Structures are given as structure tokens and as C-alpha cells.
Length: 226
Image 1 (cartoon, helix red, strand yellow):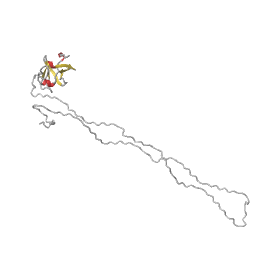
Image 2 (spheres, helix red, strand yellow):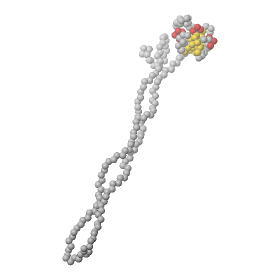
Image 3 (cartoon, helix red, strand yellow):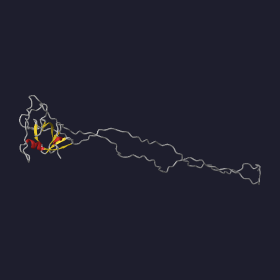
Image 4 (cartoon, rainbow, N blue to C red):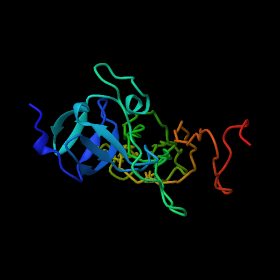
């Protein structure tokens, strides 16, 4: 239940839709006074029957900001606003609004792109070598004896002449040798890659009635503005 005793000066005031209306500068038996600022050009008094609730040390109204500006727009009672004091000459009031924009940021991460494998396999092929080999041959000659007076030695005796005959035999022996060497290395190279994306930014659209003083350095967004 709403307690009027909980209302005090300095509390933030919010409309029914949650919009920040400002702070309380004074409290009376008939209502409260909201400070002048960005939403109200002058201090405004809000009747007590429009006060709805106090939550989180903030005062909530049962109406919206537009209801306060329009006379008699509320159901159950007129929404009357009262001007308490006029602003002094030369007094400057300002409201601030932050305009944000998105920017692109490139983040890199390492991923596997592939793999290179070098495997050693055994391949068998048939080769031939021409090798000169030696072999011995036996030649038997018969030569007639010369002269009639030649004396036969060892006549009628058995005799055997043995002549060894040799040749070379080829033996194929295989031995390994280093034919070549395969070297595998990896090199990192850097190249430029262009990325793109859509970014958003906030711009202020200025609308108003009456005298509007514009900063000469601010850009014109609306082509109809003069």
C-alpha cells in the first residue's frame, strides 16, 4: 500500500511507463514538485492523487509524462500543472544523450586446414649387371714324334695327367646405400585478408517548435532543416 510518508525530497520520479521525470525538489500536503530539467522546462507540481507507489526508493506516478502535459487527459481527475518560477536570464539547461556506434573487430583463431604426410615405401624392381667372368679351357694336342732313334721313356706304363680346370662364379650380393634424402619443413606466411560486416550507429534527430538554437558545428541530418 502506498504511504505518503515515504515521499521525500531528492527521490527520483518515474511515470507509469517507467520514464524518468526528474527528482522531487519539495513535498507539500497537496502534492510534490518535480525539478525542471530535460523533460520539463520549468518546475512542475503534481497533485497528490497522481502518486501511485514507492519502489526501490523511487516514486512512481499513475500517469505518463504526456498525461501531465495535457490538461484533463487523466481519468478520475484533472492533471493540472503549475509554474512555480521562471528561469533566470542567462541560465543554461542541458540534457545529455549518448550516441553509440558499432565497430568491427577482427579476431583470429587457428584451425586445421589439412595435413601433409610423407611415407616411405619399399618398391622392388628388376636390374641387370654385365659382369666379366673367367673360365679355363683345356686344349689337348697330339704332336708326332720326330726321329727314328727316339727312346721311349716309361713305355708301356700307365700314366695319368691331371689338369685342373677353373672358372669364376658370379654371386649377387645386395647392400643398402643412401640414394637421396627427403626433407619436410613448414613455413608460416602472412597475407592480408579483407573482412566486412554491417555495423550500426545512433544518430540524433532534432525536432522542435519555436526558436531552436543549433550548434553551428553539428551536422544537418534532415534536408528540410534550415
